Length: 329
Image (cartoon, rainbow, N blue to C red; front, side, top):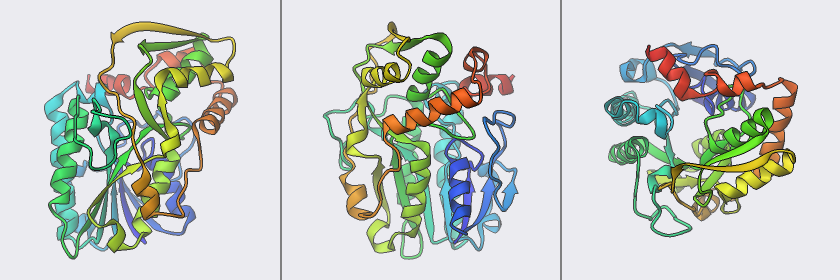
């Protein structure tokens, strides 16, 4: 396959480039390199790299590709709330426009990095793809709107697939510690405590970032009639956890760390436990390569190997919101 990946230097994109190239695919990456200098370990380079804003891409940029895998976005709730109009402009308008450009260029398959955060304040447990949207942040609303707009473009020649990804965690060469699992583990490793800002009861579906990349590739290769214009939850039923459960697993890895409930954010309105049966019905041979235990163990070993420090934890290098604010200045 000849694949065009946006956000290829990001937390998930860096894994995706690596896996695509291992399989022998031709990879063009498009990334503004906004977080250059934030690498945890060296990245695998795409065959061709474009330093462009996805909002400026044209059909000429996308002509000749079999598939677009679109990951580039303002990437979580706190970042999305800095400037909501910019979040909608990039995550919603930019994504829909990119899909239009890909369709115009004759790209057959368009994979969009959606999010299970579209379920937001979940109305019930074990939400499948038919559940109502209930977003509680600009980021989640932008994902709802983008998903809706992209799916309207589907036709006999253009096949969108929406990946509603679980909350990512785990090691990446473009490490992030502003994600719940990584943050709790990094806090315990560097500070000796496990700080939970909510009451610990909200549910989250969790998935290793490399498994998200693997799902992209599996869906790109799946029979068109099975996945055409589908929205698909990406994760596993066994990988739904309450935040307090994550904290307890961190304590098993770092026994001397104490769990501290700070109560800073009170009751977190984001609470969703998700059902993933459709994914495994469509991809019966697909399974996650990590569970939460093995993913945390790997990241813990990487912290030790790379001497992850308190300065790393408190600095901006691995926290996208801090890095973004610095660059906006």
